[in-house]
Length: 84
Image 1 (cartoon, rainbow, N blue to C red):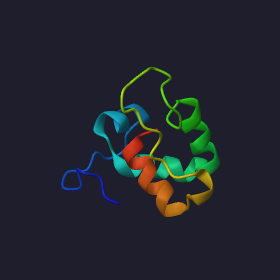
Image 2 (cartoon, one colour; image 1 turned 90 degrees about the horizontal axis):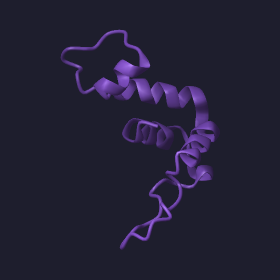
Image 3 (cartoon, rainbow, N blue to C red; image 1 turned 30 degrees about the vertical axis):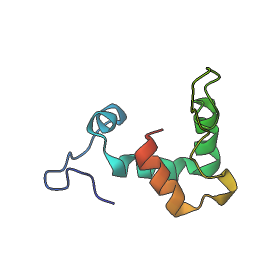
Image 4 (cartoon, rainbow, N blue to C red; image 1 turned 60 degrees about the horizontal axis):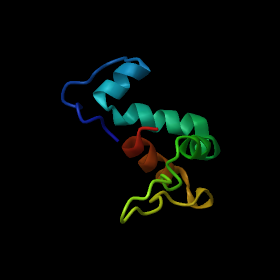
């Protein structure tokens, strides 16, 4: 997975800079380091796995896979688009 700026790379960057640059490889690497269990703990703590509790018409549940169905590829994909 390449960064969207593959043509002019960021080089070394802090987590804050990675967030500002929306640098996918950084978040894939973080996801791989923390693993599926910890990643899903964070998703739950941030409320991404449940409804808001606000009466919103058409609100749906989470689109995340169940934790037990997540392997290395699914974790990689989740990490770069969710930026958790």
